[in-house]
Amino acid sequence: METDNHNPEVKECSLPFKRLVTLCSQLERESSKNLKISLVSRFLRDVPKRDVKQVVYLLLGRPFPRWDERTLDVSWAIVSSVIKKLARVDDHTLIEALNKTGDLGAAAEEIFRERELKKQASLIDKELTISDVARSLESIAELVGEGARERKERVLESILGQADPDEIKYLVKILLGEMRTGFNEGLMELAISRAFGVNTEDVRRASMLSGDLG
Image (cartoon, rainbow, N blue to C red; front, side, top):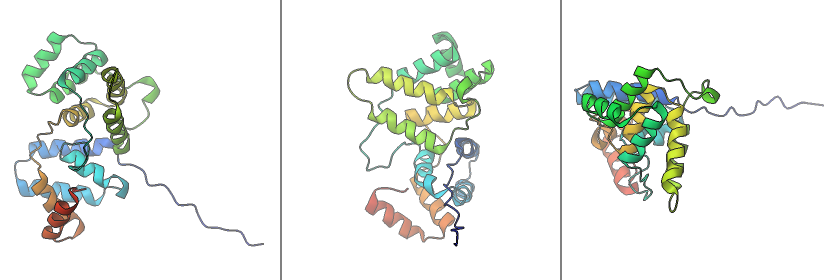
């Protein structure tokens, strides 16, 4: 009797969020638009297909495509409250870091790095992925109504508790819509065109028709 030697399809793994963080850090430091485009186009070529859309959204500093009406509805107060709780710091420490760095994401990075806080013990060996971040953002957006703030805070505590200081910096920036890497939709269109060998005008047309660069 013949046996079926066909190997089951291997499930594609999600990209480590750390790789996106490294790219964002490079984009922040790079002033040349052309070099920014090159960095992103090279990056996109290596992104697993399952993560491409979410990577595009996150690089543009938003959790969802333009046409998606969902919002995170996460305020500065909510995020700062979670940061203080996880890092065990008071308002004075947070404000001091904020005055030094200029934004809450960078302030959070400094606070967590100085304290060398470890990841949650139960999650210490688990690498944060793009899929993890996407699921958390979707969960936050779904929380509405009575008690929503407390439930959002619990989701934030979970995702930030899994992240290292660099990852926390960009998670906070994404949550508050303050990415500030200088990489906008126009540059993303050029990066997508270069990454996948598609005419730039075709990318722009598709984006206009679908309302979605991802």
